[in-house]
Image (cartoon, rainbow, N blue to C red; front, side, top):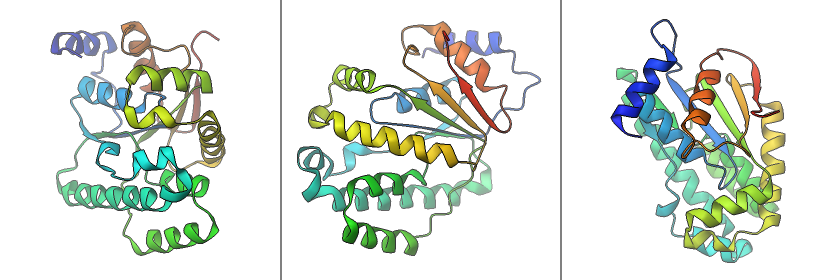
Length: 228
C-alpha cells in the first residue's frame, strides 16, 4: 500500500476519536490471506509486524510431500520459532509496542493435533509445556474463513512451490480444526470474517469496509459477512 493511499484511508476512517487495538492477531487456514491482511493493517496503522516464517522451516516442503514422516520435526521447528519470537516480543514490552501478527501461539497445538500421531503428540506437548510461551494478549483477533475451493485457488495463485502438494483433505481437516478452536475461543475480542468474496488487494473498498467494521469492536464475538 502506497503512503498516499494509506493517508487517504486514514482520513476516510476518521480515527481521531477512536481507541485503536494495539495488538491485532490475524488467523486462518493456509492460503486464506492472513499474512496479506496483517501486512496491510500494519501499513495502515504504522504498526510493526510479527509474522510466521514458513520459508525458514527446512521440514515444511518435506511435510507437504509426506506428512507422516515429517510432521513432528515440522511442528517442533514452528513451536521453537514462535517461542523465540515471543521471547523477543516480551523483551520489547517495556516500550509497549503496537503490532499486527499473522498467528496466535495457541493455534500451534491445533496443527499438532491434526498432524501428529499419539506418541508424537505426547512428545510435542512435553516440549510445549517446558517452553515459556506467555504471549501478550491480543486486543483483537481476526479469524479469516474461506471454503476449500477458494483456499486452493489462492494457494495456486501465490505459486509457492512447497505448497503444490497440499491436499484438499488436509485443508478440510484444518478448516474443521479452526472452526472448533474458534467456537470455544474467548481469549480476546474476536472478529470472524467470511473472506470468500473479499479482495483486499485489488478492491480498496473491500479493505476499507473491513477496517471500518473492525474498528467498531472492543469486546465479544462478531461476524463479518459482506454481501449477505
